Image 1 (cartoon, helix red, strand yellow):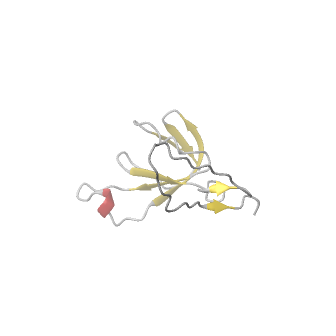
Image 2 (image 1 turned 90 degrees about the vertical axis):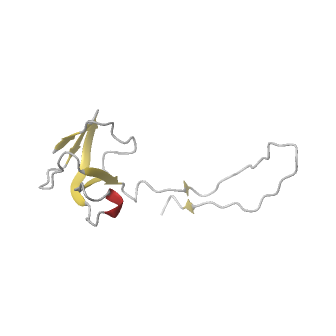
Length: 110
């Protein structure tokens, strides 16, 4: 299935992402809609303002809200690896205090 859009495609959309849509209602804003997203399928190709997906019976209509989900095994957030080095500097003349430093880290070889 090929979906042509009039707007620019979100730059985060990648081949392999799962594409969904929600049927919008004129009566309710998206934040209040109680509709479950409908799976369109896996993104196979992105060309300009067109998205090619796996063939499916679910087809969005003009005006429906499109969204996508990334593969969480490939696109994780946080640092990856075995070690990290950080250098923190204060760029002012006055003294400062550091109250907290944190990081979200996951091993990359597991």
